[in-house]
Image (cartoon, rainbow, N blue to C red):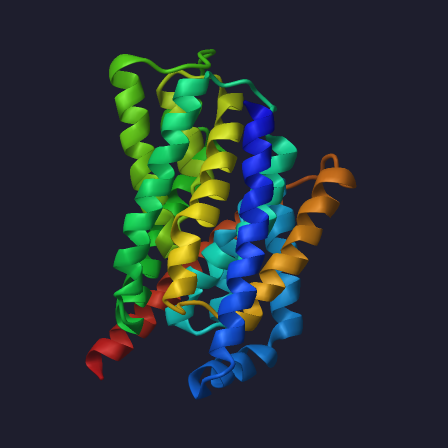
Length: 298
């Protein structure tokens, strides 16, 4: 099973590259696409650094969406309306690479794993259709709410409060617990489309359901990799709701960040860095709410 999942990760990376390059080529034949490219080209160095750092931290367990969202918002290096798509499309390659490296960390029962992965993919497809219909104001409101909720979950995880204080040893779910796991992962897949990372909520989910905490790794990494590669990623590309240059920066520099973290950094003190990132998440959430309020008043 793990070899099959690793194979899907490789297919996901190839599909991501093909879809992005093909759509970029089409976009550059239009005036809107050329303008999109020129806007992103001004920030390619900055966004490459963001891609490297965010996916480096993602591999170490902090997550990438919160970091990337904050960086894009602070520097205005990606337009608000393109942030959700850029996050999901740009991080597809590095996250699939990450899942490829970490699959097999814990052997989760096949039916449980496959159903939860499938639920996340379906949730992301439905979520992408919703987000792609939002205008800039809708994206700002959704990102503000999403980042605020994500910050709360991240804080609870770090403090071990609520479901994060629960531990179990199960590697499979059955009956009502399996239904709950599938339904919640479906919702989490949808929330990925507005920039709410799946890692921390998924850890809480498997914990409260009595599973081994290690089971979160193949479930959360596989969910993110496959929903981005086969779910919402192609939807965002098709709708042109992503920054062309920033996406390429996330793909390339992000993959390098994953490899550096996995092969060269075995451990590092992350506690202080985590709280810094958390503060930035809440500040970014407030910035999205502020811009939404300005737009509403206008």
